[in-house]
Length: 234
Image 1 (cartoon, rainbow, N blue to C red):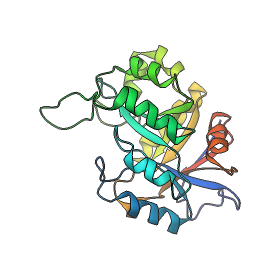
Image 2 (cartoon, rainbow, N blue to C red):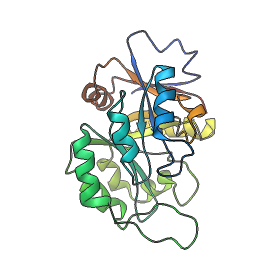
Image 3 (tube, rainbow, N blue to C red):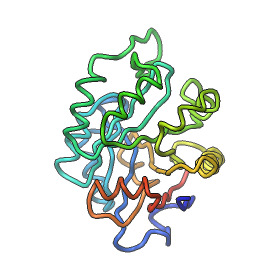
């Protein structure tokens, strides 16, 4: 099982020299974040970390980041059941192809609060994702309903086989919730990711995923092989 450490990455002794650190979940003003991709990238470089810009059903900022820093091509998708899935691609061109084929123009209209829901249900969405070389992680499993994937997966247990990893530290979640999710991932024998879920640049880097890796492919492979650690605060 991946080591999960609940402490400030900046002060953690678990993070060793030579490790690549990535904040694997953050947003820009392309979806529901406040700041631009440029500002998020600048902040990540200042912190000495990589980032994954996981805008909801949008890829513009993620592709922009991939051109100028260590960044994983990624998108956060929301099924018609309001379940959020982080999808990390090995190559920007695969993210772009997937987006154009399955996501662009496939949103459901919302009369009230925008939940970013797509027309695909969770199983359909996962089946489309599986046609590409990528890894999936359940975002903030203990988020408020209807985005609580912890309850949803317990009600639809067969779907966990189609999920690669679980986001065990999300800095927007309370500590006790992250601890429950971490134990759940261990019980399921799933890989683990961690991130700030930052919507502003000043919050970036409060949780990271770290491993000894030189490129995106190796970094993602290490997650699948559970050769990474997750360090962060709630």
